[in-house]
Image (cartoon, rainbow over all chains, first blue to last red; front, side, top):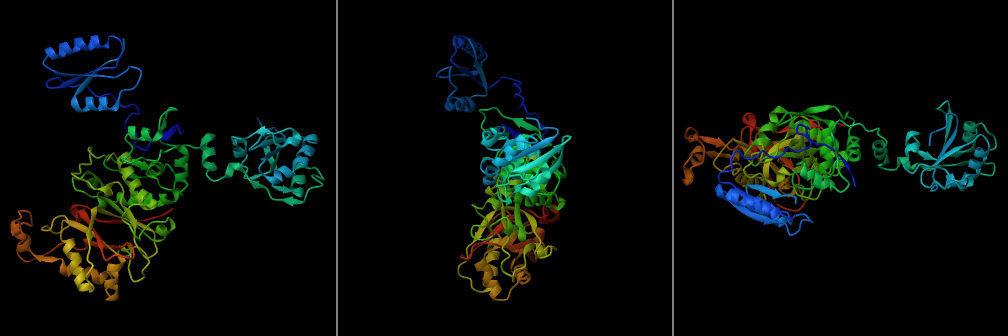
Length: 92
Length: 477
């Protein structure tokens, strides 16, 4: 396996891609709450759903079948197409 | 294993009959002045002296610049003082200063090729031992990263897989030109980023080019940077067009380009990858990315790659670059800002007058059937269509002159609203006759398979001083 490539670009962008900026406002946004399957993640997300819903935001819940494996592609595609933001409950 | 400051060094391999034959000589030298042996393929060889130092990574062979095994070198004060290649008793005796070496052996035997000079090995060893220097930023991948996926993740691909630009591949690509890797070819739009020969090589690797295509890629980049071609506007436009690359001269045959059957289609590596390399340079170095500054409404598949050679096999046909001031037999790259291919499928015309009128009917629709002089066209004349002109004694100049006559219409037919279509020429142009193309706006090349009464028309982008004009650049080394 080749492990070193040469950059074909003008190198005007950093190697590490910057994170997307958070939105200025949550108005009208649909928020995904993503449970990766770790213990008590659902408790955190339940509370978050309650708070966000009180603000009038649309919330959709998603969950990985197990925390031990990467998410099914279908789940990631569903989040990307149905929501504007995602909050992931990462750990117990 | 360090080399001795003073002494004899031999580089051998088991897979060499001459190296094997010399086992008694190795023993003779080891027992005499001493001998340090490196084996390229098997450190247990030569058994006669209990094996050799392991040079399977070929570092010693590389650093000693060994091209043939066996090679015998005498070192004095750390410097080479003598070298014998293959087996020639007199040479070995001269290098060692010992008479009667291998007395029972033949006087002379050729050696074998060193593993360090096997095809492709030069670049591998140069990279392996740190002698390759690059200006480009290295990207380290993890052991489990897929290099092709890594190129996608970094946005380097046009959508199809690219060949991962490893240092070895880039080094090999650079061997395709005599130009220095750090030479700047020019500033690539839209970001006007300087493009070195090395950056071009990296993108040519990714496009799938062979090193012998690289001079054509370099010429294509240089051509794209000629201001009259207006590459910046071409890559930004909402229109369909992209650079169409036409290659002429001996280089086209030398690198196996296709000007025959399916010349505008898939299947030929040089055609496919040279056009793609130019587009990848624009994307990666220039930053011309669809959805970013490339605002094409629809685009067209030729924006992946669009490159072919002109058929110069018929001596009655004057190749396109010759009409543009280049001597016949010169290798050139010409660029045309073109969109997709439109067909003219005329199976019936057997006279040049009929065919020129027939082709003109298709040419009228370039851009829009009711608009004039806004777009050039590149007519790709097939052998069977050209034969009709040739047999009537029409050369390129005559064909173009006849087109000029037939590509005229009354402005009243083209004016806005005429025929119930709002699009058209402005009312001020309604009087008199209008030519479809600006003077010199119709270009003709010859390509295609021997069978088929059909030709291709490649419509142009905004033409002339307000847009792009075709450009040609000589292919150098």
